[in-house]
Amino acid sequence: MTKHYTEVAIDPRGVASLILNRPDVHNAFDDLMIAELINQLDTLAADDNVKVLVLKSRGKNFSAGADLNWMRSMAKKDYQQNLEDASELATLMHKLDKFPKPTIALVQGAAFGGAVGLVACCDIALADASASFCLSEVKIGLIPAVISPYVMRALGERQCRRYFLTAERFSAETAATLGLLHQVVNNDSLEDAVEPILQAALQNSPAAVSAAKSLLHNIYNRKISNNVIAHTTQAIAEIRVSAEGQEGLSAFLEKRAPNWLQNN
Image (cartoon, rainbow, N blue to C red; front, side):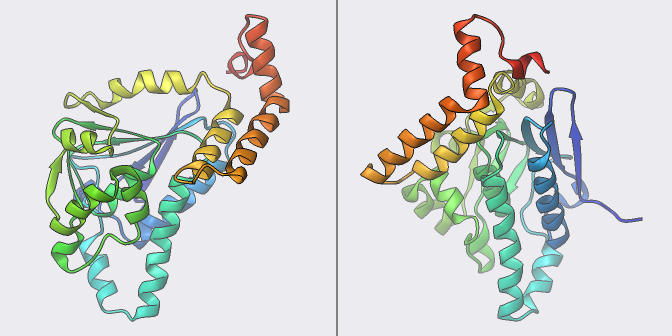
């Protein structure tokens, strides 16, 4: 029987939970878990019944980052093998970052190394007040390379200059101040805290949410230029004449619920 390191559950509303399930090793990830996560993300992205994705984990800790045995095995491999291995982790981060539906990370306990990258790739992140974070790579002679674009986008270069180089552990409160987290909640109340966010997200046009995520990725950190202005005007024109755009405007003007809510 094949052992799986992840689980997926989809509730009747279309909320998909993607769960890291290696609590015995603090949900550390290796090549097998990375492959599973990539496959799960591809499947969930293609499922029209999925409206929101929640990334979470079982056990005391969200994730300790890379699995020690996996890192030990990679140390014995050559440059090309390490390049291919790193490419898989890069694929995972990219797919989570570009997932076409809202993504929410729920963090408890420790989130170290690559796990900070997973959190940074999600659209929204909540954590227990007791959660802690660490970009720990330099402690063992490595660097947070693959996750760096996503973590730097969340924390900013100035903060990364500190935490990439010192590998200091920082609290959930600090993570929120730095921009990694949106909300810190009382211990053991993550599921309650995320519910209002889910309810808000589920009210919205699925097509518009997907288009809004695409807009964010295309516009962020670009100089306001004629190309950017053209992109934004084209984007709003396209969504206005789309099926859900027409339905949403009609429903608003007619003071009725749009069909994406009526169909739920």
